[in-house]
Structures are given as structure tokens and as C-alpha cells.
Length: 154
Image 1: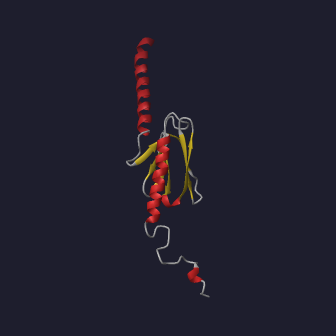
Image 2: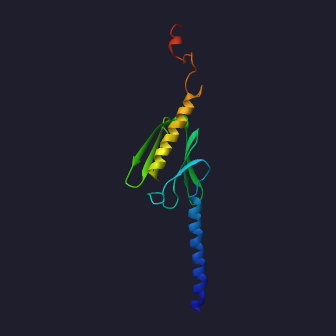
Image 3: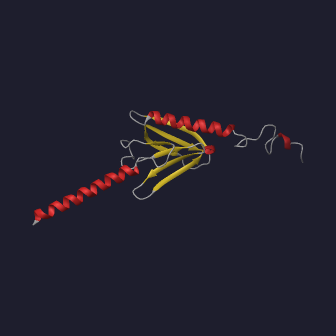
């Protein structure tokens, strides 16, 4: 009788293992279209649910899938202060700091070329953002509030 129970139990166990493998594979897929950079599953903290970074012309989104749900941290391109890359033997770590005092985006386990591409995209989008009139700088010929144009008022 015990031998007859073994076969269904092994089948159920195999089905559970296959379901978990498929779940972890599915959670590791890019979460959206565009410039999404996924960390390697071989790096620390990314074995089951690798972190992902989406870079758009307006923001940087740090996305971490979880067993149930996800964590997202978004920074507008105007609030990115700096991008640092720490290249190790196998993988690179990326640190994206903000100007607003919010916690930085820290990503471990990206390929070096992905880390460099992330930095290039951020710098490219910031350049485009600040070259667009009205995005964070006064228009040509106008003086900012509190500037030299206010000196004679009293």
C-alpha cells in the first residue's frame, strides 16, 4: 500500500517544483517595454527575483519583483544628481543618487556594458531635458526671481 502512495506524491511534488520554477522565470522577465536592464541571477540579492531598471526620457524606475507583488522606486530625470558605476570582477553595481534627499537607487549584478549603457541613457535624457526651454532654467533674456533685476526695488 505504501508503494501505491509514492507515485501520486512524487507527481504532486514534481508539479509543485515545475510551478515554482515557472513562477520564478516569469517574475524575472522584463516588466515593461523599453530600455529595461535586468540584473544577473548569479549576483547577490538577485537569485530568485532579479532587480530591473527602466530608463525613459522622463524617469528612472527601479523595479524588484516579489513572490506576491513588487517594489518600485521612481526618480524623475530632473532629480537625478549622479550615476556611479562600481565594476567588480564579474558584475557591476550602479548607484543613482537624487537631488531631493530621497534614497538612491542601488542595483547590484548588472553586466558592465549594461551599467555603462544605463549611465549613457540617463546623461542623454538629462541633456535633452535641460535643453528644452522651460525645463528647470529661465528662458533667454529673463532674470530669475531674486536676481539682479530686483536690486533697485525697495
